[in-house]
Length: 135
Image (cartoon, rainbow, N blue to C red; front, top):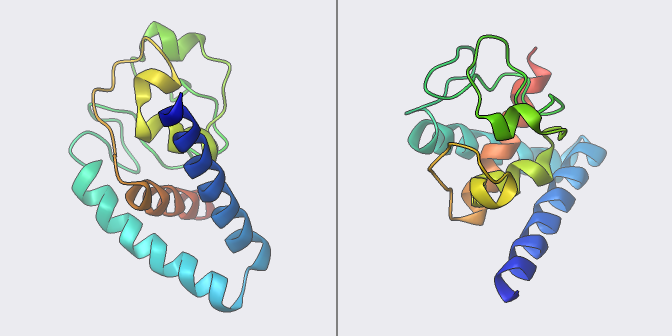
């Protein structure tokens, strides 16, 4: 119970950080978001790129446009039944829960990897949000 509360608290903090960066859109919050996006790109390369790419399906589905996309909906990717049945849409909070523990986020999925450090998750999520803007 204590762990679930901590994850929820971290998810709320990440969502708040992202909301502030988007809402402000200039000044120091924007500078921080740009810095986080660069660190996020580095974290993505280190932690995600072994299975994922931004623009092509690999072992995992492509990530361009992931934020706002229905879970399990990339054409040409063979998802688990759990993800195909999901009615969820990727947003910052769901990505944080997913990266922290995919099996807790969507039981029955096939991703066997976690991003344990909240700061790495936050930076990866900011990087993925910036990829949406580049569509």
